[in-house]
View 1 (cartoon, rainbow, N blue to C red):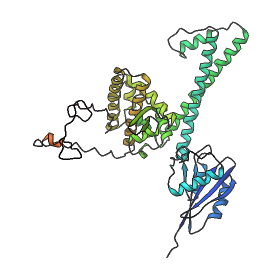
View 2 (cartoon, rainbow, N blue to C red; view 1 turned 90 degrees about the vertical axis):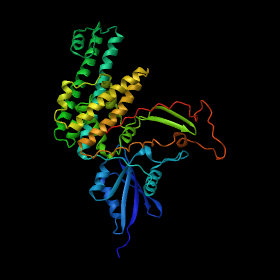
View 3 (cartoon, rainbow, N blue to C red; view 1 turned 90 degrees about the horizontal axis):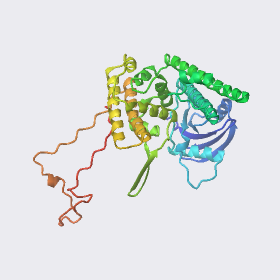
View 4 (cartoon, rainbow, N blue to C red; view 1 turned 180 degrees about the vertical axis):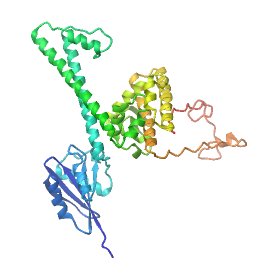
Length: 425
């Protein structure tokens, strides 16, 4: 008979120049091995020491600035490796001592117990596109800061632009004709303008590079399908897919909403339930893209010429979902606005519901089977007695139940209004 395999759960506390290693034996001891170098060759030496025909090695380490190099190296060698979400590691509130030894032992012990939450590791091709997306986002932030410096400089010196929009052709001509009172200020102004030009050119180069990468990307069909939605174009759709990856790994859109941090935070204790702002616990670039897209749904549903061109080669099912999104989200926007809600709250609510349509279109474009429809409500028989069906008894069945008027349990109260729920079929 073949010998039973014994599993060793190895926790790695990874740093730039070193890796702290702890081992948790299945149904056995937990020990700290020590520190090794941070290179792949040092990890190979460690594996040679632990390798045994009757031992199965499983590795885990926290996601961090070192990326997924160790994960891909161990996977290439044929070993099971997981990347742990650092913010979801269970920790004691009273634990105030943090060392490399303790961190590696905690990873190994929780890995053995099955109490860790792992992150989705993208393929190298997808991570490369994501790096390009984030490089463009950094360039956009630099461009915004450079423009703010120009406006701040002009405001300090008493220059106010009276045109309609900023950074258009008219505004740029206005800046080109402007002359400062002193030579020193003119030099500073020219340098500020040059910074805006440099960052604008960088954003344009990165945008062109992203559109070029789309032609050979494996998610091209999904990106083109997402572009059928109003407010989502090439860069926005590529940002969503590059940051989120395979959307079909989420069982339902509610999971994706939580992952993006668009659900309200909650503090419930006993009978007290308090809801506050959104958690913002998810992917920030994707959440920003959805918030920007949500602003477009303040306008009535309409298929513009640009939108028709983006929907030209898409299936009827994808176009139907996109059109349904326009009608529902615009109606939702108007409904919330009529109640006097703030614009920020309205846009956030629209972005949260937009996630459901994004998930539905992505799954449809990937050929995922649709979700099973919910069972229809059971109709009450015409011969059934409604009083008997809704009858409520006390603990003592001999005591007649008489609901008080205008109380939560009274049958005379009007039925509560049903909440609006976004259902994507």
